[in-house]
Image 1 (cartoon, one colour):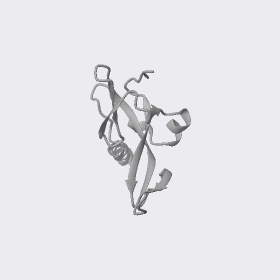
Image 2 (tube, one colour):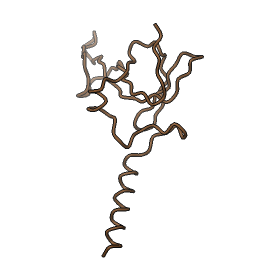
Image 3 (cartoon, one colour):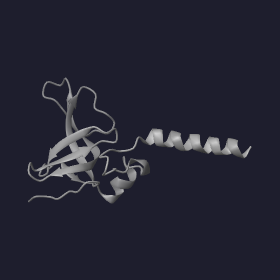
Length: 125
């Protein structure tokens, strides 16, 4: 069964990782057979940037702008629930800009707003 996604959709990708020290976001943690490390799953919160129907892939972007290409039918890829949408990595300044195919830098946006507010308060004095 093929799923459909469109640019701007928020998705969760369950990424399988291996390391000696799982992060605090790790789930389904299992020790490796040799006992030297662990395998685990970390949920990655991404936004769909582009859907390539011809290749059957979805191109997703992280908050930092890194691009990841994932098959549409990958069982580790799913839509974010409304709770995940509210609780996790989606912030008002991170909306997808369809024309530029980029995300604004939230920190730069916040800095710019603070600078403008300071200039406005100085002008009033």
